[in-house]
Image (tube, rainbow, N blue to C red):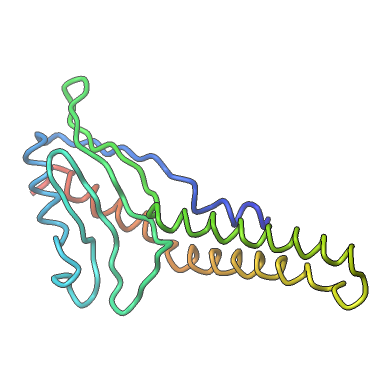
Length: 169
């Protein structure tokens, strides 16, 4: 369970959205559905990001809330078999992935070093390795909480993208 939670930020979920529109029309529709700046996002939140024919990057913004573990969509438009589609993935920022790798590495190094010290000098150092294990569990709890807070973001962004690319209206 701990390993599943700690590895969850490294998983990306592929997504493909089909549309009857041309690449330019689809990009324009999606651009109108999303704000281009965090500062222009409505007070009730919404999808914010960059939308061009070559690159799409969208994230959900919830006012007065910050969550580095929230997923964002990164992709591009392409035409395959005469159909326009938006191909990409839901992922988290690479800096967050690097931070969690660093955190886990430090916790494991601490635990190993503390265990070695506890074996070399038993007595008062006996519980010293548990600090590293506790930090690892604290990191896992933090990741689980952050992922839980961002639980509906994939579905929300998928709904925004699907609605914009539906070709209706």
